[in-house]
Length: 298
Image 1: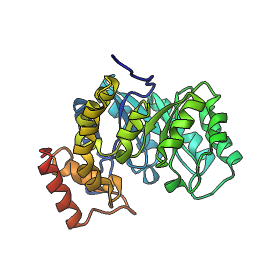
Image 2: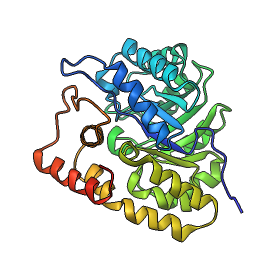
Image 3: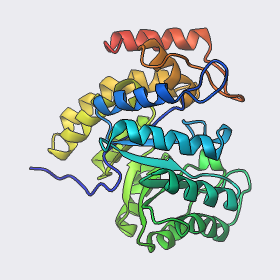
């Protein structure tokens, strides 16, 4: 018997990396090919220009080109969601409006980073972006990156808006997340690959994953088993994926390690990044290769 929750943003989301050429230019053909391969592997939502997509070092015209071209390549096979994050509210609004104009089907909005605003400031910042477009919104709570958490009270206020549909939770607190899920009625998505099983077992709608670059199929299998009520089967998938989660997220930066994994798999022609991000260390790549080989992902 299926117990699948509602899913406004699909079930297997990938926070997709942004491919660059060795000269530092946006590599649109590589982005299109990568998005297609992710969907073929099991993804049904592609998040563009999130943290893993190096959003802080891409400009709005590049973000718009990425949305248009990836959406064209996928031709309706997956939902296209765009990150609109910034610590400048006017900039975040421009990102949101520009993303909608380019064809995005949803937005991801995080609390402003670095500024350390009050909760009223967090609320007004997010609502300014929400009200600037007609798109459904996923709120992103990641205090380890932003420096400020979205409190229960602020989230409850945000949840009153009809276009606020979901939360990507990377707080590391599944128990509190479950309580927030119950209190707000919002759909919750795991934003921490190491906690995907725990979130799904608590009723989350899906995942927005970095590790899915290397293996989206396993996360889809795990979600299907949770939906079917087979928690032991889903737990077995999570245990199998643990070494890969550690290799990709245990020490290195997500975008860096995802690009290295894709390069090893032959699914990305280059692993170039824009500063301040740099390539992984040789020992990190060696450990990643070993894990991918052991999991038969090479």
